[in-house]
Amino acid sequence: MLQILNEEGRVREGLEPALAPDDLRRIYALLVTTRAADGKAIKLQRQGRFGTYASNLGHEACQVGTAFFLRKEDWIFPYFRDLGLYLTAGYPLALYFHYWMGNEAGLKTPEGLNLFSFAIPVASQILHAVGAGMAARYKKMPLAVVATFGDGATSEGDFHEGLNYAGVFKSPNVFVCYNNQWAISTPRAKQTASETISQKASAYGFNGVSVDGNDILAVLSAVRDALDKARAGGGPTLIEAVTYRMGHHTTSDDATKYRAEDEVKAWEAKDPLRRFQRYLAGKGIWDEAFEKAVQNKADDDVEKAVAEAESRPSAALEDVFAHTYAAMTPQLEDQLAELRGTPREGGR
Ligand SMILES: Cc1ncc(C[n+]2csc(CCOP(=O)(O)OP(=O)(O)O)c2C)c(N)n1
Ligand SMILES: [Mg+2]
Image (cartoon, rainbow, N blue to C red; front, side, top):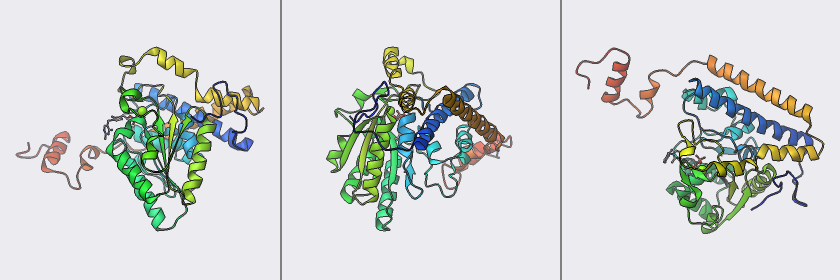
C-alpha cells in the first residue's frame, strides 16, 4: 500500500510529490472546509433542516485528493459520499446543501462543470463513467473520466461489467474506490475474499493500486499518475484508497449496533487532516494563525452556503410523484390529488 505521509505526518524519502506552497495551502483549506461543511450538515439534519444525510468524516483526503488534479475537460461520476470531491471540483456548496435539504434542483450541475449528479444506486455510476470514457475515445478527446464508489460497490454486477469493458476497450477511466471498511453494516471481510480491492483490476487486465486513503499525498500522487495515463491513451486504473467511515452510514443509521468503539478509536489516530497539518507545520506553512484563518474562512463559507440554500425555494409537492415514470400512473395521480386535499372521484 502506497503511503507517503506516515501517521505522524513525516514524509517518506523520495516519494514527496512536487506541490507549490499555494497548492498545499489550498488543499488544506479544502480538507478543512469539507470537514466544517460535513459537521454543519449533521447538525442541520438533527435540527430537522436537512433530510437523511451521508456523513463524510474521515473521507476528506480521498475526496479532495481524487478531484484536485482534474482538468476542466475531464468528467466525474461521483457517489453520495463525496462532499470533498464536490467542493474541490468547484461545485457551489449552497447547491449541494440544497439537495440534502430535500430538493433535487440542488443536483443540477452548473454549466461548464463536467460533474454528473451523484449516484444513489450503488455502483450504477461506474457504467455511466465507462460509457463517457468510451465516448471520449471515439471522439479522440484526450481527457480522463473518474468514477468514485465504496467497497460495497465492488460486489455489484455493475462494477464487474464496467471494469471488464474498460479493460477490453482501454477506456480512459480512473476508478477510485473509497474502501472505508463498511458498507452500512457489512464489514470489509464479508464483502470480498480478495486480499485487496485493487487486485481485482488484474482480472480485467489493467493496473490496480492500493493507497493510504488518509494520506492526501498518496491519494494525490496515485490519482495524478492514473489521470495522466488515461489522458495519454494508456487505459484505465483502479485505485483503492484505504480509509475509514468515522461516522454512521447516514443520519438514519446507528453504527454502535454493529461495530466496536475500539475500532473507531484506532482510526482516529490516522486522521487525514491532522496528518497533513503536521506535514505542513514541518514545512513552515502551517501555524496557529494560518489555522485560525483557514477555520474562520471555512466556517464563514459554510454559514453563507446554509443561508443561501435555505433561501432557495422548497421542493414542489409534486416532486414526490413526478419523477418515477415519464407520465404519472393513475394511482400516483390519485395519491397526489389526495395529498392536495382534492381526492379524485373513484380514486383508489
Ligand atoms: C443497488 C443498490 N443496492 C442497495 C442500496 C442500499 N445502500 C445504500 S448505501 C449501501 C452501502 C454502500 O457501501 P459502500 O459501497 O461501501 O459505500 P459507503 O456507504 O461505505 O461509502 C447500500 C447497500 C443502494 N443504494 N443501491
Ligand atoms: Mg464502504
